[in-house]
Image 1: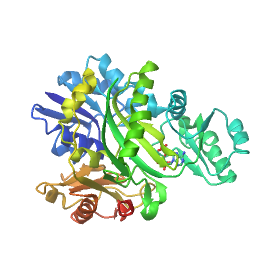
Image 2: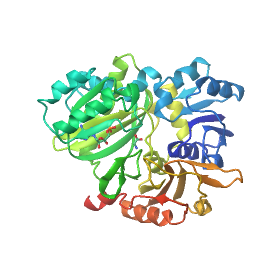
Image 3: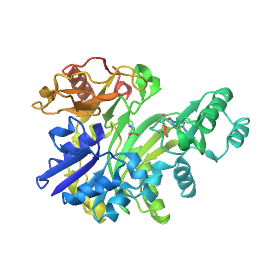
Image 4: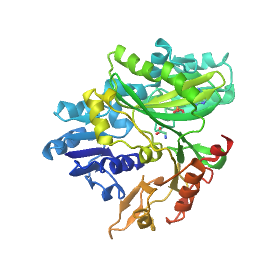
Length: 424
Ligand code: AMP
Ligand code: GLY
């Protein structure tokens, strides 16, 4: 069969690597891909939002399955456009991708169907939001309704910060129209856990758990980023947490979407906070996490193409998801200055060593070939170095050892990915 993956980051590299293991995949394309993905797929120079060109290419090449990776095209209707062209596509349609695309929608859904989450109010005007804040309990959380590259969430310690936040989101429109509406939410405390799942519209199958590190600097300091590293499984995702979420969160979310006439097929990523009162949903994403995928897929035993097909066909109930009884850690190698200002175009060396070392992976997030055919840095997050191990500590030691194999100018990483493991 022929497969096209839409996207060009570390997540898509991990998906492409996994898809390529299916023996019936005779040709794999990725649009636009990157220099690492080029090792397992033919990269096609089409952007993720160019739905007409993607559909035309897929028709021309007689693609059997298109997998859409990122949130923006999903929310904007990439799957709808591909299906309208007669193609088979994996991912939620726009009316279901709204689960991630609108925080107000997802909060209202959780409230309506009693899915545990933080208390909240939604506001369409800055005046009303400011008036509400005058009597609200601090700290408090402001969230832009729409997609904002994972940066539309502001944790405000006091009234002054909260007012400045409303100004930033709703008046100055720092995230454009994503801030036309905001959710103001109760501040919660607890450990965060990410849980990815496959969904076929009615059945949900949970993958293994993971944990991200969103801040740029050690000790969870600095600005929010797309994610600086992950580990899997999370030792804090206990059987008790699992049982609670199975009872109140996972199937309840899938059933709620179905009841709303928004059948969800694809990946649901549950961002959970383990509070003193029990697990609460922080957010939903309608796609694989990045860099959660880079630690989850290397541990997955199943053929991922079979699972994608089952999601599309509505036969996920016949699949047993299985994960290795090991652990994985991913350390992101970024360009110094990320997520603000950073330079690109530096040569990357040392990548070959990953090719012949079992249990070690380098997933490219921002790389490209320069005019000489050398691989150079091409983004804030450059590489995700993943290693497995028999347990989390071993995996962490392996991953950090492998970060030393790779060199490029302005290489930057956090040194405390997985530190929480020691507290488990
Ligand atoms: P989100 O994009 O909704 O996951 O928010 C980004 C980050 O903000 C989360 O990973 C949490 O660390 C934090 N956050 C979001 N909502 C809350 C909340 N209600 N209370 C405390 N922290 C939160
Ligand atoms: N790593 C967080 C995300 O993919 O949203």
